[in-house]
Image 1 (tube, helix red, strand yellow):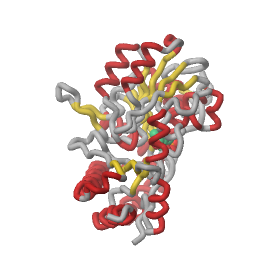
Image 2: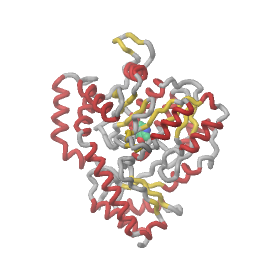
Image 3: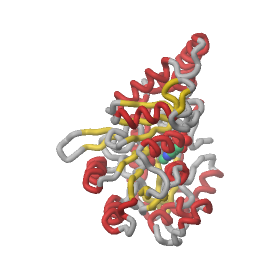
Image 4: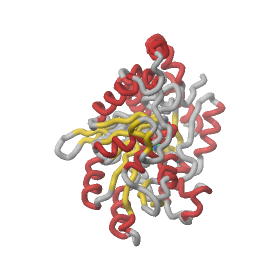
Length: 384
Ligand SMILES: Cc1ncc(COP(=O)(O)O)c(C=O)c1O
């Protein structure tokens, strides 16, 4: 059996005709830049997340860069974030000439540890310069939104939610209110990179915000900083969501809940199979599947103990199973951030996770018999 980590074509076969029809409509209309699909998709995403504004941009990385600038972050400001994330979460800080403060992760969820965030906010020597916090809802698992709102209020910092991996994920508050990731930050961003839960057939991204001024800044910054054509108050960039990609995304958006349900079913199947063979527990730790949408399983990541991760990965590769490592090192260990002088060992949970984590295949079209094969091979590896 050959099981890829991710397969775009299995989904395309099912929606091919709808997609081709919409692409044809865009090209036939002659309006291929910032047309009605972009506006309608922006409206759909704003309603879905539960915010006032949405601004389509070229990709999630630009969305982060522009949104952080819109929050007023610039030269010399400090921004708290996680070192265990995709590069763009942090490069948006340094590209805006600000300084990242890395806070270690919670070893169970892989999300930033909010106790440690509060420690930094109470004891950092340059506390006055900490202006913002970028939490990442990693692998599709929502960071505690109720606590994020509390932190935002108590410490008076801006929050930019990185929802690149978490579209549709929710958090249930202690009073029963349910909110979606992306709805509580001063701004939030989404990525429509093809492998994402809602993926385009190319690049795409979105910024969402409630505040009119923040939204207006982003809207003009994506077209070279111009509100009126050929008049520029600030120097922006060219970063628009493509009209064809918006048309594709509008088709796929109609299936998002179905896709999310499938991902959760697959995660549940992995969990059931691992639990049925508890002896595997000596070797791996698998994620818990909550009953609500607080985890939308962009990735299904297990931990492989006792230094066996890379050997298991090689074994699964030989058996035709694709896996990946998110992420092979903490961002504080990247050469380009060496100037921050963060000593090795200072973010131990991140460093441990980068040596133990292994992402198994998960995508809506993955078949249950393929999940069974993957688990069988993991058991075979450990001689079970
Ligand atoms: C957590 C996170 N942030 C930001 C991005 C950047 O998105 P994009 O690839 O669309 O630039 C990604 C995805 O690649 C991501 O996973």
